[in-house]
Image (tube, rainbow, N blue to C red; front, side, top):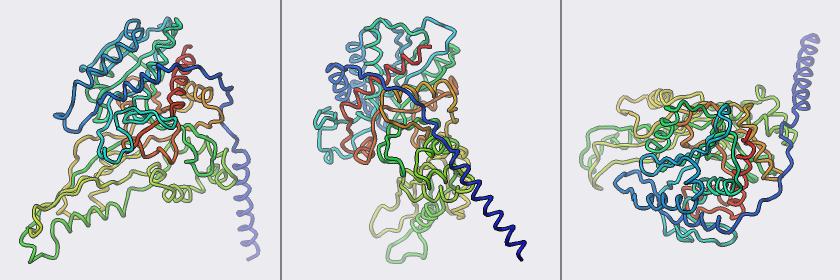
Length: 484
């Protein structure tokens, strides 16, 4: 018994030593960069964003609701307010409303970069709940209010302001720069981003890196870290919607059968919610932990330094932390539409539900379908893919020149800010650009916190005026840093 006890004690000591060595050698990987002086931003730059926000460039699910006049006005706005970009850059328009600018570099040996954004916005679902006019672009409390302030006109206008500023300074890039602004990102990007990528492919373009919208600079949203953290998306989740239907006998509500179509489908959807797909730590999440773990307190640092040992605890922590935390570690299940019935005293013969899944890298839409059928285990429930579907994006490397350039530019503009890779849980137009680059990143230069995290696509969307000014500064610095 003594030998067994000693052996067990030895194993425990070795395990503790292993954990502690990993923890104490888990050193900061944060890039050390000096902050640059703040560039003066003219009032006209603010006015230009307000003008862009007042144009109702809305993408509706029903194409019949599309108002082309507002997009034509946006075309005119770009031409009038950014005359140097329009005249000195090669400016092409795709399918009437998507814009691709080519700023030719002097060194054709260097691969180009692509800076992206989108000019369309989502509809206003509840205008009566807004405290301001959704398309008024009002400035109050140091903020600009309105649909598109975050998603995504501030990026588009921030990029255009930075480029126009550099053109006024007679700056000539060595590396060719493309500016790609789609007009239908909110409904899939088929006529904007896809068309522009096909054009670039036809020219044999291979981009050094692509930067699109994504996550932002979080403030006190990451447990264990009080410092601001800029999140650079190196991958994004896929999205698939599955339609589930049940067709059974109906009848009069005075004589209900033990199970109706509603009962069967409701139970099936409930099982899907109760048994989600298995959680996992994706490559993006592991990069996130490697970058931020050393900046945390001892317990979190120890867990992230020993991910293989503490994986169950890490996953459980993220599952319980928040909806966003849970979304970072698994394919999520979200019933969005449930339809059945035509009259209060008639048992319906059919029931229909749509469930949206956001797919984590490493899984596919086919995996989701297989999981659903296995969990429901009911032949009465029929399933088929519905609408817009896409698998997760490839994972872009953290050790590329593009990531390092974006990282350095963030550090130069935003003082006392950590950076880390992350997984973008929504879909962006950047997924269409994988045929022309392996280095696709997703970041928008504004601060996100508990006060504004639910406003984009929601109520009272707004951005700090200073954040918008910093966006111009960031994109300008990124272009300068990419000039090599």
